[in-house]
Amino acid sequence: MATGTEPKVVTWPTLFVAIDWIERHCVIPDKFHAGSPYLLTDEMTWFYANHYRVRPDADVAESLDAPASAFVYRRSQLIRPQKWGKGPLTASQLCLEGVGPAVFAGFARGGEKYRCAKHGCGCGWVYEYEPGEAMGIPWPTPLIQVTAFSDDQTDNIYSALKPMIQLGPLAEVIPRVGEEFTRLPGGGQIVTVTSSAQSRLGQRVTFVAQDETGIWTAANKMVRVAETQRRGLSGMGGRAVETTNAWDPAEGSVAQRSYEAKAKDIYRDYVQPPATLSFANKRERRKIYQVVYGDSWWVNHDVIDAEAAELMERDPAQAERFFGNRAVAGTASWLDPAAWAKRAAPRVVPDGARVVGGFDGSDIDDWTAIRLETMDGHQFTPLVGPNKEPSIWNPADYGGQVPRLEVDAAVDEIFRRYDVVRLYADPPYWDTEVDAWVDRYGEKRVQRWYTNRVKPMHKACERLKTDVTKKDSMFSHDGCETTATHIANTRMAARPMARYVLRKASPSQKIDAAIPSVLCHEALGDVTAAGLAAPKKKTYVYTA
Image (cartoon, rainbow, N blue to C red; front, side):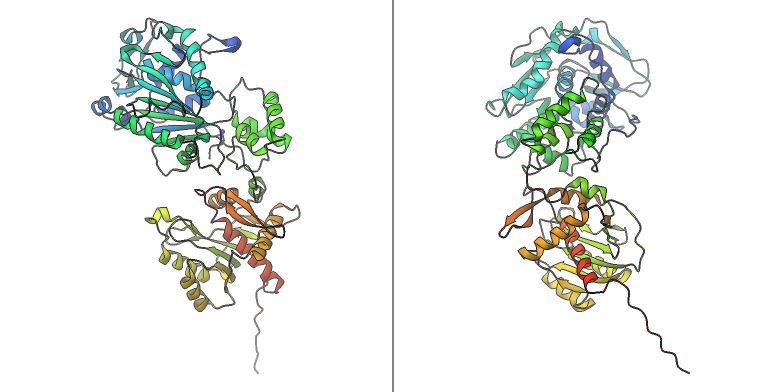
């Protein structure tokens, strides 16, 4: 997770010529600065430097045939709050992809120059390359699509594109800018595509701008739009950029799918505020704005906060997504992620420590996880195996099925390394293994704890929730990122007698590391109540 404070130093080849070209040819599209040079902020420059990052072994001949092959990233994703400037930034990229040096053209020996005059632009701009620098040329016939769910959303970008062209040097290069269609030199074009006008889908395109993918879902058929456009890009060696606010994790949007995908050739630029800051707290909300709006100098935090405060009255989660840049679900959250984050206090738990544990298992879809907790209330995910990896298993990492022998070995290692007083294990899918653990370690130490029992589960969830949120609690945890994510994904499903059980925010999300947290904390409470928390005193018999 980026925080906006990390140093940003480019130590790899990228199309610096493209970045300079934008600042020389694009202009601010509106307000009092309309027509002035469009100068990129440091955050925007960093995004461009990564999107146009060139592979050190890029082959120019291959690139000219399939331009995407020269770049490290096949597509990019920019996640920022409203008013950050995503629309004008995307408009500048449309200009670049339309008539600027967006295609890798080899590495410079030194002294080579990019001349605008050679590419139909009479501005007189010349860029001289450094030795070894990546060079760029324009697409011969760029075919670009600006895509959003509705006409209003495509207008967020297209309404910025038109004056960016008409008020600056590009007016001579691109003389005809229509309402929904722009003709480019060499027979290229920029067109808009929406959910209600998908006739252009399936075309072979060189660049696609996908706006507000946080609301692109299977229900509104925009997932199919994204997938179709990506196929069209692959045929031309083109690439795409997604821009979006933070999404509702209960909806399974295109933005969420891109961010959570395992693909390493997607560049994700998502600046999030510290999890310990609460958006509901006005003072902390100001700190959140400082992080997520970064160096967007045109954003007035007072105005933003007024909008956020008004929206919070009817939809606090939406306000946090739009202005706090956090992916939070709409309703029924179980445990405040900020409250959980404030309890993070990583420490080393030595071998031999007296602990309790919680186990939740799955088979082919959900994850399997083990959490432990010390007698003084410090919860952690033990590192197990020869590589000391967290005791959390995603079946997708193991060919689609949880590695049962590996999990069994981890349980054995945990019992050998620690003084495990009690392990609460949820048996479904793991009945055979749990029976074996009971036989191996004893029924007092390993106990079957069914999470589908409403009354006990509600009580256990409330115990952990209370100890996380109350001021005088000694509870702490290791800051495990997976556990934090799964807790943030967890929602309350109502049951009779004002009780609840835990459920996922959406089918695609996971909460499996949250369940062992509940179980091991419940085990600690039960062990403490039974007087088993303190180690047994050894009795020595002396003989004369």
